[in-house]
Length: 304
Image (tube, rainbow, N blue to C red; front, top):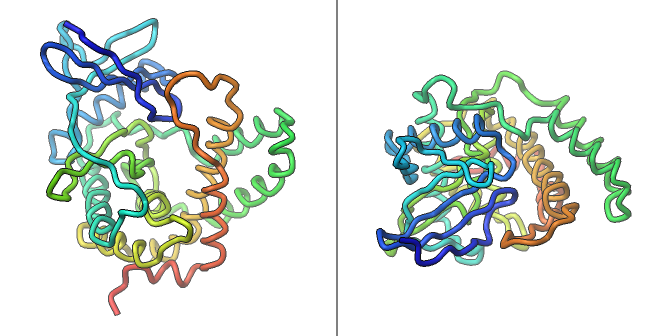
């Protein structure tokens, strides 16, 4: 019997809930934009990862034998509730950064064995980002009209310089601090939210994670180096990948700058429990990378 249903202030496009019942506590995700096929692929991937040792909870099976159910015409999935705490930026130390790097590399390694059809192309490819810039331009919003030329030019420059031969495979795409839970022993207890998981360059995913975990008032290079060291203990980086960190990181910063404008700042409906995420924080990260330059970033995590 359901005793409470509480909306959670998490996620950018989906609705998430904590369900308390006489059989325990559960996490429910209602897919607001994903098609049924997209949600099905997401659930199948998470189920696979949970079986091969990635610290992520397996989706539960409904009475009809399916993991996906339909609520008000939208796909939904139920997970066991995992206890744990999230790290605020001020509490992140090199130890935590290193652990996150190791966990990310294990996701990349696990993806090599993923069943056919469980890893999609994703919704945030460069062509998708250009379409979002077009949406921003068409909106003619005074807050962003002057940003459009710079965003478009920056994205064009980065895409033109991109190395299409970089090692690639399963990427999480969103391993932010609110998607990692820690237990009382200061160890990772769960990796969450694989909805943005897609095929892509591993180093792009690494840079997304660095930007998410290593930036407060400044981009902390000691944290970035620790995260890269943790990553390379599980999956070493090639020289080409290190050379690409600057460009892939710039793309990652632009990706979140653009999507936070379209998914948060431009959203007319502000109802519900979702958190508003500031796009300027990732534009700051983009500028921070430009100031550091390719050589400094490529040296992160290299033992002296």
